[in-house]
Length: 108
Image (cartoon, rainbow, N blue to C red; front, side, top):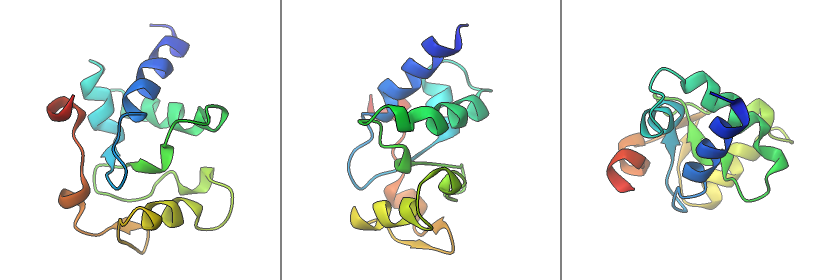
């Protein structure tokens, strides 16, 4: 599978994550038929800064931890973006993760 095609599929899903909701790397990987490729989804999110319309801040790990935060400019930009959408984050972890979790396999 060509990585750019994979990344494009990841971005297509990520663009559909609703405002104020989050999903996980694994949920996107499962939805696009690459269940064991959560880490590749992470790599796609890291490269998404080149794509202005990809809300990478809405993609976190399976426990709701902001594992990608060091790829955002500024100290707490990922957290600030999420909080501006009403998502509560404490110690780099989304609170009430189930409440905010958006599963593309169920929603799309």
